[in-house]
Image: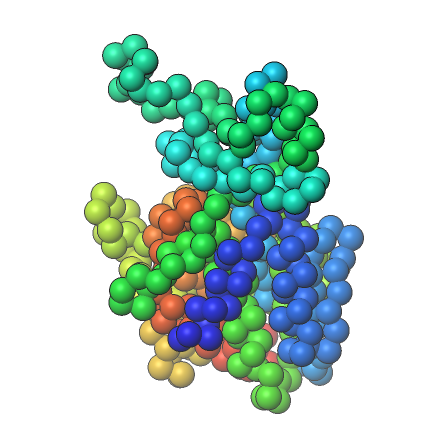
Length: 351
């Protein structure tokens, strides 16, 4: 598992918010170079690694972007005001250390707000809103902040690195969806020395967190026969969540989506479900089935491209997603990569 953990750390520790995925794209290009016949970047910034075959065209997609922030204003004392890129819960941000990507390189900062000691009693009981927070980089004026390289539109990420927990679990930022990227690369590694009939497109998509944008354009250009989305999903195995709300568990194996967002996102085609379940059963890979009521993935965009692309979602159950301390099982990640690889190997029998 050490190799898989290192692979995940490489992608998760790197920085790339929606629309600014360049560093992640570079890493993915490097990892796909000896696993595919060609690697290219399209107009939107999606990374596409192609392994040629004479069977069905299978797209494996994992989004490269992480949720983050963007500087919208620098006040006269050098404090940065910001807007979210992607879905944040406000109270998670307060007190975090961050990295601002400036013109001259990275700058460290902290997310602050008015201290509770001087708040009105009623205000202490309220959640501090994102609009009332700011970032302190140590600048004393707007001019000094700009001299340090900060400008309107500078992007911001959380300053966290992957760390091991007990029980084969790890914690870190951006597992949504760098875990998906790592799982896709691990699947391609499993396929490297095998005779694969399918043409395989390993695609790192851009701007998923702000509208599934790269998935839509890349799928349109590739026009695959089927797509497998490599993702993370929410488990219900920690305090505060009932089994009725979320029954999937960390460590229970990869999660196969039947429907998400109450069917408004994707209703996975039955032949795709049969394909994935049949493959997992045949290879003895444990898995979990999921019907979700909230959230969606790149599959929502991909399955509606042109005349339709049969699409499935293979996810790793990940605790506390959209936070700096996401937690997953490396064993789930490994089994997910195995299932993706085995599904690609059997695609010609099902499509």
